[in-house]
Structure formats: C-alpha cells, structure tokens
Length: 212
Length: 212
DNA sequence: CGTGACGTTGAATGCTGTCAATCATTGTGG
DNA sequence: CCACAATGATTGACAGCATTCAACGTCACG
View 1 (tube, rainbow over the protein chains, first blue to last red):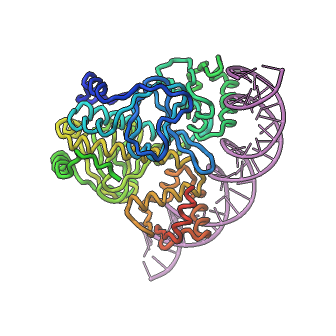
View 2 (cartoon, rainbow over the protein chains, first blue to last red):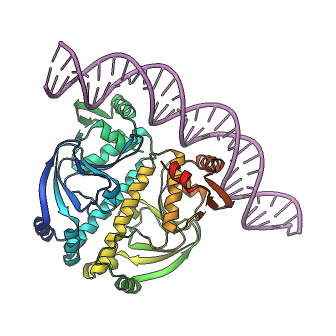
View 3 (cartoon, each protein chain N blue to C red):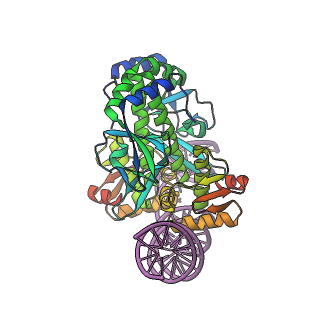
C-alpha cells in the first residue's frame, strides 16, 4: 500500500536506520513504551507483533487510536505528546532518536521520502478509522477484520494478536457489544472460532457485505 | 501548530509553489473540487474560507472526514482516491500538480520538510478527530468549537463557515441532534447565538468542561 | 482446586437517530 | 414590493442500537 515514490531507496534507508537505532527492545503485553505527555524524543519502529497507541480519559475510559504492525513507524511529535504507546502483545520495538532521524532526513532524500510515505499512509489509515466509527457495531468489526487481514497478509485465518478489550476500545464499542457482535457474525456463518484468539472467515462475501 | 523542523525554509517553499501552482480558483458552496475515485493528479492548497473532504455511502449517508482552512494542504494520494473534495463555503483553492510537487521535494529539502510537516499535522488532527467520535454529542460539539477557534485564531466569537449539515456529518451526528446540542449549550449558558451563523462563547471554562 | 482475568449472556436504561410537523430565512418571480 | 416556494433549522414523539449493570461460564496459573 506504499506510495512508492521514486526517491525512496530501501537500501539507503536500512543503512541509515542501522546507524541511529537503539534496540530492538522486547516488551511484555501491556507494558508502556512511551507515556502520555512525555517529551517524545524517540520514534518507534515496530519489529514484531503489535503496538497500540491510546488515550485514557479522566473517567477511566480508554481509547485505542491505532494498532501498529511490523514495519509501522510511530511517535510523530504531537502524536505521542497526547497518546501513550504500549505493547498490545509481546512486541519487539526499535527506538529511533527523533532529532537524528530528522537531520538525517534533511540530508538523505531517501529518508525524507520514506518518512513522507509513512505519514501519508498513516494519515489515510486514521481517516478511514474515523469513517469506521460512524458505522454499526457489526460493520465496524467486519471492517476491522478485513483491514487486519490485508495488513497482516493473511487470507482466511486471523490470529487476533490483541485482546478483546483492545479491539473494543479501538472500535469505540464496549466489550459486551463486541462479544455480541462476534457471536452474531458466527451465527450468521460469516466467521468461526477455531481457537481462543483465532477466527476463520467462513464466507468472504458475507464479510464484505457486513462491512457496510 | 507547525513542527517547525529546521530544514523548512518558507521563502524557498513559496518560490517553489509559485512555479508549479495553478489558480487560485474560486469555488461556490458545495461545488466539487475533486471527485471521489478520481485519479488525483493534483493536490490542493486552501487559500480562503473552507474546504471539506467527504465520503458518501450507498445508503445516502455522508461523512465529512475533515475541514481544511487556509494554509492547509490536502489530496494525499489514496486520500482523494476514496474521498471527494468540495467547497464547504465560497472558497479559493490553489492547485498543485502532484508529480511536480513530489519531484520538487526530491531536490528541494525545504519542500520535502514542508510536506512532512503538513502530513504530520493532519495525521494528528485525524487521530484527534477519531478520539472525538467516541464522546457524547455535547462533548463532540464543544471539542469542535474549541478546535475551530484555535485553528482560525479566534478568541470568543465563532463565525461558523460551514452549514449545520456539514458539521453534523463531521461529528457523526444527525442535524437534529446537533441542533438540540446547540440549544442545550445555549440554555446552559456556555454559548450564545449572535447571528445566523455566529456563536459567542459565553463561558470558556464551561466550554472546556463540556468537551470531556 | 481456588483465584483472577477474560469472555459471554441477559435485562434494563439511555443516548442518539428517525419521522414528522412547524418555524425562520432566503431567494424568486409576478 | 409582495406572495410564494425552497432551503435550513428547531422541536416533539417514538424507536432502536449500544451501554451499563449484573450474573455466570471458561480458561490459565499459582
């Protein structure tokens, strides 16, 4: 889904990242990688599993703004000023010093292009997520599933790497509503549960119809 | 609210933009600037008033993903592949050919930095908008007001440049709910109407409290 | 085997949407 | 200049979807 701008050179980027990286560091589930309101000197490149960025409100409500899969870069300045970054499952994360990365971008065009690509992709993703939030519970979850399948490169089996709690907070639902939705889609023959955290898509066509 | 990266040079950018720009063109209210599903060869720089990007669903529902004020750049590749760009009020828009802009970014670091700034800002804005959508109607509108005041540089008087319809579709509410919310906040002494499309903030403290 | 975290299910409440009627404003044409 | 239509906004009644509260079931782990 990358925009593949002409001036993005993979090798140069990898070489550059190798120079300024710190880690990768392994985080246990629910461990905080960067706290809400922190300075934000670092950006994070997900290496394995899943990272979430979320906001917790005064009343205890939580909101998972986005999930980040391997290859995703996060921690854009004001982003992690207001959001906390946490491991949604066991996760490996690479730390990149922001200032170094930015000055590198100022001299290496390929790095600048890579950053632009990353922000653009995530901007579009955030907009789609906003669109998702005005759909029904069923449509939200169906869309979430298709998105996750596409991003993780799976075809029919989805190993949910995050908890129901996380998914519910991401889709703007209560865990009960999410649970009911899943049961409902199961009864409709759209999906089936094959493991504790594993879903099988039984009918791709129905799933697509449900996401509207 | 810009990130003011060191390599962003205003003069260079303005000079560069002057070379590749087309327009500015004036659009009447509700006129389509770029249609959903179009190729998207151009990006758009808002010069005056307001532009909206929105998605219309098969059932007739519409969703205003974002409003763009003067100085905002929009039309990031896959963004306007799925969204249409329209004038939310009388608007002046500058057209920038994407390919030219991108190759310019590949040679002019200041342009690349400017683009990165713009995407980052809008990415954060989109995330905040997603957060907004899981609040109550009152909180959504209160947040919208404070945001609009900050972005347009106003203190206590807000001249809503877009229709209630647009605002409702942006906040994920029906026009009726929006209307009720406004009346409610008026009765609470938070805001007052001074004109058909003008609101006065009577109590800033209450407004801030309402946005949670 | 008990404990705790997580998920499921049911009943009741509540916020928002829908439908419908009314009012206000703007614009149009005679 | 006024009557009229058209659009947009307001208000009320009612329905619906999701939340909340609560109880129960299930699984992992000590």
